[in-house]
Image 1 (cartoon, helix red, strand yellow):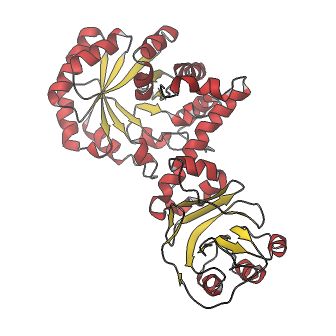
Image 2 (image 1 turned 90 degrees about the vertical axis):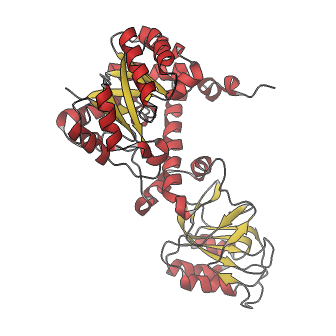
Amino acid sequence: MKPIIQVALDFVDLDRALKVAQEAVRAGADWLEAGTPLIKSCGLEAVRILKKQFPKNLIVADMKVLDAGRIEVEIAAKSGADIVVVMANASDSTIKESIEAARNYGAKILVDFMGEFCDIERVRKLISLEPDFLGFHIPIDQQMTGNISFEFLKEISKISNIPVAIAGGLNSENVVDAVKAGASILIIGGAITKSENAEKAVRLIRKAIDTHTSIKSEFFKRYKEENIGEVFLKVSTANLSDAMHRGGWIPNVKPFGVKSKFFGQAITVRTYPGDWAKPVEAVDIAKQGDVIVIDACGQPPAVWGELATQSAVIKKLAGVVIYGAIRDVEEIRRLEFPAFATLCCPQAGEPKGLGEINVPIQIGKIKILPGDWIVGDDDGVVCIPHQKAAEIANRAMDVLEKENRIRSEIREGGTLSEITHLLRWEKPR
């Protein structure tokens, strides 16, 4: 069968979902999915409206059925769903009931495997239950780690003659790999729904499928730690803070050097106000691209100045962040070196050598460990734990991508409040 493009409408607002659906269908999208967030937010009315507005397209209800299979499939089918999603880790009895209900009400069942629940023996068992489709779903939280693999899809395809769907992180760059691995249904969400032009995005994906060619996509790539620098060049500290649940911001530091984006891994320094010995020694330890982060108790005298900056420039360090005082600001700006500090004063202290290098430090509520990623721009500085760097970088890209779609909707005449339905989502008082 010709590979099917299924658009996962994982919105919480129906009008935004319908707008993307219209663009996608114009470009030749085959199936439309009422995503789980949309169904939870708007109920099965979302399925009814999709079916009414797009009668020629199959409508998938991603109910993620785990229990009460008969009634959940029945209400989805009666609402207009052509296909209902049941989870592979549901009980056999739930899946059997779901399949029987679907047969009774003229719908079909897609049994979906999610993340760590993928098991080849479970596949064999489910094949014997005769669902209409099998699905392999790479969870979004797993996608954010950068680990997208089609190996399990290949295993399923070897033993099953049931059409197999794949979802999670697909785009014009990797969709051909998914088809080669055995997928006949390509469930695509973000690469379409977060695009500024969903119609163009679908056409690009269809072209990749039809020509069996990977086509570069500007966004929607998932990054691993070895190339997350590409992400930090694209996203803002605001995007990163949003990705960390509004966290990560290093408080009370502001730019005194050149105002340009910088990022690097932390060389941490704990010292006392005015004692500039350890901060200067840290320059010798640091590698090209590192950021020196100094905890000087947020107080003067200065622990960093022009000469330390000259050394940092020679070593090609990325920047310095000081919870304390800096001086020689005019010269540091001429050197075009990113330098953030709590305050500026002309007075320096003495190099007594108290303190430590590459130890955990804490600035406000933010704990910073050696090797953590530090990113700064005009908005401020954020710290990203190194063990979660790839995940947070990918989540920040996700934030940026969603904002890109909203920007395009604002340019078409909406306002942020209207587009995001702020009044609807305010907590009841």
